[in-house]
Length: 367
Image (cartoon, rainbow, N blue to C red; front, side):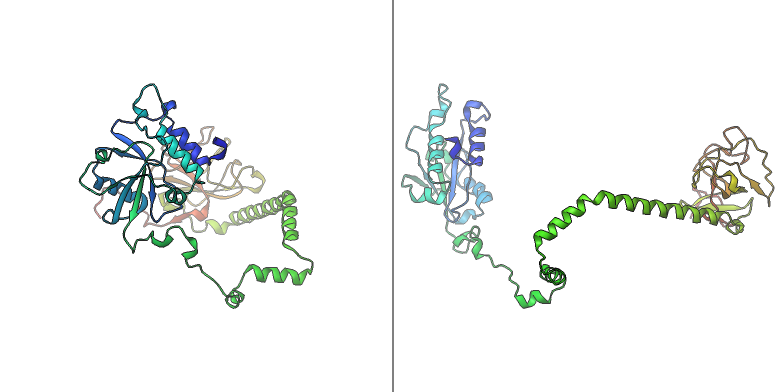
């Protein structure tokens, strides 16, 4: 039997199977199938209803499922099962709900179409006409069918407007309008056929697959191009920092600002790493100098240790701990005097702007 059921129905049977104890149902609750007068293809699974609800409350709950306004709703309760014993779910010796299983069997026999089920069902139990009455007053049981009749002639669900896609107006473009568009598939295919009269879409797809197979070789060539570009950029950068012009604006002992970040401090020295001493990478970093004597004369250019890339560098002591070292080399030589930890840094000249306006920032000063 399961092989003839849809996967959705199989899932519902598994979840609602009382023998698996997967659901605990109160004695005040019943599970009803729901059909709608305007929704013939809609498949409502069993919905739980509280027998203590009024019919008005039931209509409000159904409104969230089918969209029909509660004031335009008529309810009918159907017994579609062939077995009229609906109380088996209260018997502890029998864990199978006969009414529900019979309803499921009729749903399968109707091909999963509630419209067919409605047309062949004449077992109407009663009409739920009193909105103030409790649902339990009409003695519904699991597996029964609650049918909703939409009395609103202007309802969105009327005449198949929520199910019949043929009623939805589709966007249609004329051939003339399509020809005027740029970058269309038709233009692209026409151009391909002009280049190759034997061109087909299958050939184009095979060509793309071949290109993807050979993509590794292309990627390797691109990597070589990128490496060459990076090497050329580094060479240009080192050439720029090798000229004295890049430090002409820097004065040792002056106030300065280092960017990015707007970090303020004092220029302690201007140094240079000779070309023959280049061993590192071109970034701001801690000085890893050998033991050298450094003259911190105001206007002198200091010979920097060969642990930094060649070119000019500026030693800065920041006002705040935003640097990278304490002005000392790993061997203990002082390059930036009286520099607290994390207040010193060696910067490239183009990051340093000198000027008396870069005074120490007082965070507590009134604006």
